[in-house]
Amino acid sequence: MKKAKMLLVAALVFGVILSSYGVSGTYAKYTSTGQFTDTGRVAKWGITMDGATFKEQADLFSTTYNNDAIKSGGSDKVIGPGAYGSYTFKLDVKGAPEVAWQMDAVVSVKLPTDISSDQIKFALKKKGEEGALQDGQGTFANYDLTSEALEKAIAQAITGEEAASGTSSKAYAANASVASVGGEYTIYWMWDFDAETVGTNDGEDTTAGNNSANGTDEKLTVSVKATATQTKTAPGA
Image (cartoon, rainbow, N blue to C red; front, side, top):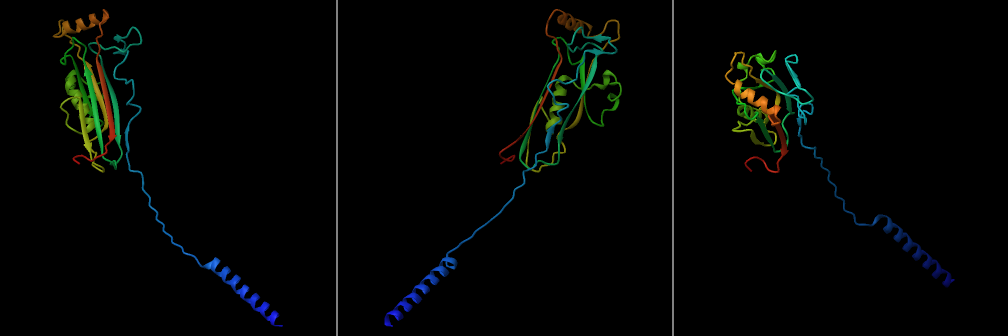
């Protein structure tokens, strides 16, 4: 009997031990929790060079002018006294970029070797400001820019900074106003045709034409490059 009681007590003790282990295994533990979340939107850029106008080969010059009064003998684009043309380029800045950035312009206008700025002149007009040049290109008097002045005017139109040459740069802070940057502009050019029997510049014109016929590289070249780049630091920092 005594032995049976001892067995019963042992069984009860063992049961308590098992119960305690089960409770502690289920409910008794240390726990620490931490959590955080954050979201960052990509900063706005929104500067685009219109791919239809900023392209490798522009259409400022042609193979023919004035109903074929000037016409290339092949596929080369040509120019000559009485020729004129135009080309429109577009640079968009949508809103204000949310990063510090810099706009750079490199513009080069090279006249034929024997031709001066009195013979080939240019104009640069923003959309809506074309005036007499919009229809029929106007007269030579409407072309008020020399090659050097055109370089400066285009550089300023691109960067928004007054340019001393065809190379111009301007740094902008994040969210800065960009109202003066870019837009839609048209370059106009004309090689004056002197209707007089003996024109003032006939000698230079003729020399350039003969040089071209003899294989000398006589060209009018207009090159425009605009680059917008994010900068690591803000202007003046």
